[in-house]
Each structure stands twice: as C-alpha cells, then as structure tokens.
Figure: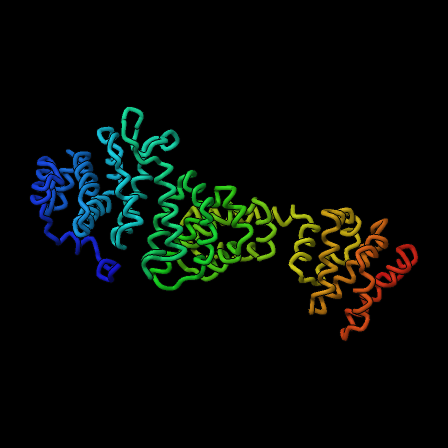
Length: 454
C-alpha cells in the first residue's frame, strides 16, 4: 500500500476521468450502463440527487456490476468514491441496495472482497458502504439472505452471515493490527458504533473476542480527533451493555475503572452522557454495583449533578444512577462489602470488623465455597507487606474463632497457627497485638477468651 493510496480522499479520486467508452468496447459494461454513467458522472450534486430519486436501483446495479467486472484499481476507487459521495449526502440511500429489482444481484460481494484485497482507500470505503448497507436492510429479524429472497435464484448469493462475519473479522483485524497507522482504528470504531446497534452483530463481535480490543481505547482524550474516537468507543461499550455475554466480559476487564476515569477527565457532554448511560445499564448486573460503590461512583455522580448540563437525558440518567447507587449501598450487605475488601487484599478498620452484630449475622457466610474468605485471609497473612492489613486479618480470624461454633477447629485445620505465630515478632505493635489475640483465642477457645475482646 502506497502512502498516496493511503491518503487519498473521495474528492481527489472524483477528479479523475474514467474511460467508460473503453469499458463498453471491451464489453466490461453494457451500452445501458454507459448511458447511465455518462448521465451521472461529473454532474452537479442536485442533478445526481434527482437521478437517484428517479432511478436509484438502476444506478446501484451499474455501480455493483462495474465493481464485479472491472479490476483496474483507479476505476474501482472511482466507483467506490461515487457511492461514498452518494451515501455521505444521504445515508438513507443505502436502502437502494435492497430494492426488490436487485434481489438476484450479489450486491454485497464486491465490497466484502475489497475489505481484504484492496489498498487502504478501497478497504475503508468498502467497510463504510457495507456498514450502511447492513444497517439499511429491511426486515432485520427475518432476513436470512443478504440479497433478498434467493430461493428463486440458481446462483449462490452472499448470505448475511457471510457479510457480518466478514465485516466483524475485518474490523477486529484492524483493531489488532491496523493496516493504516492513523486511520484504521478510528474507521473500525466508527463502523462498530453503527453496526453494534444490531443484536446479531453484538453476538458476532463477542464471538470474535472483540470486546477486549475496545477496553484499551477507553482512556481520557484531549484532541478533537481523539475525543471523537473515545466517544465512539464508549458508544460501542454502551451498545454492548445491553448484551449479557459482553457484560460478562466487561466485568472481568478493567472497563469500569477506565470508564470512570474518562468521566472524571472529560468536559465533553456527549462523552459524559454515553458513559453515564453505560454505568446506569451496568449497575444492576453482576458485581458492577458493588464495584461502583467501592470506586466512589456515587460521589462522582453527585459532583456531576452539580454541573450545568443541557442534556435532559444525561440529567435523568444521573438521577437514576444516584438513586440506584444509594439503593445498592443500602441493599449491599455488609458481608458483600467485607468479602470484596478481603478479595482485594487490602484491609482497614472499617466499622464492620469490630461490629459484633456483623459477626453474629454473617458468621455462616464464611462457610461459602469451602471457607474461601478464610483461605484468602491465610494468603494475606503469607503475602501482604502492609501492617494495617495484617493486623486486621489477624483480628478477623480471632473474631471467626470466637463467633463460629467450630471456629477454632476450622482455623487450626487451615494451618493458621504457624502463619500467625510468625507475626508475633512483627515490628509493628498493631500487628503483634492482634496476632497475640488470635493465638490466645486459637488455644483457649471462645468460652475462655471472650474477656480478651479488643
């Protein structure tokens, strides 16, 4: 691919003179095609618009058959530029590709082929045209074939499955290994922001492992170009937040903290709006609610509410998110919060640790998943270098021993004694004090150690 082809614009390409008569002479286009092309080519936008209104499907037929039969790069670029110009002026013209008179035409085939075989200009225009064609197709739920009812045709036409898989594969390939250093990723994201409106595309994208390719692009932006890319990336994530398998992937990635950083660092209303709408969708899904509480999203939302936004949808979403987070904080049991704190491996003297009611109400929760949380506390004792975390872990083990009927036996079986004994020589008084409390309860049992309550 030459830089010349990489940097071409539609306007530059349309300045070329294409020898249509030569193509007719060599029977690559018909006499009717030539007449239509002569009438259309190099004409004013208003006149072209009139021709498309009166005879749109005939022009689509000419463009598609020319792309199927003519292989000269300059001509392929020219026809793609004509289509690009036509669709840029009015994207709804993409419906013309689905006119019933073209039901036996393989309208998708050349564009799908060019995704992989053309230079950057050809690839990018083909992607844009395909994306608009897919979005404009009729009866989205019922169409199996890309080109209408192919049952009466003896030719095998490109199916919608071929089109979507081909498009999604190409888009993911551009995100993984861009063909063009500065244009591939913005073009791919721009197309995805249109295509992911359709559930069937969301499925293909998740199957192609595309979600992980979006996450690194969620980061604060400063230039106009990077702000637009960030906005369209967040728009993709918002569309995926309606699809369960995508939500499951987002939950295991760093998407949430990144989205929050974007909101904190963005002054663009449209960026803030799409992220807040995404957070609102994710709030009730899986562990997102608990994560949002930990990441202080409520405080962020209240800070955003204090700003003057013109968008009513944004204000509504902020209010809903605030209400949902408050309800979530109330609903989220103290054990869930405790569990999350332990799993993160960083403990502090939050009120629940020394709250007798917490231990009384939640002591059986510690039995979940084969005493998973106790095992994590053991790992913390082995690996943490933070004195506060070690002190709290020792204290929590002593509380478990005291409050669970079989606490002493369970903790002993998990080989806690050796781990805690080592901490008796720790250089921090807070650690040694709580390690000693734990050892005393482990040896004496709850009945005799209750007086040692710190």
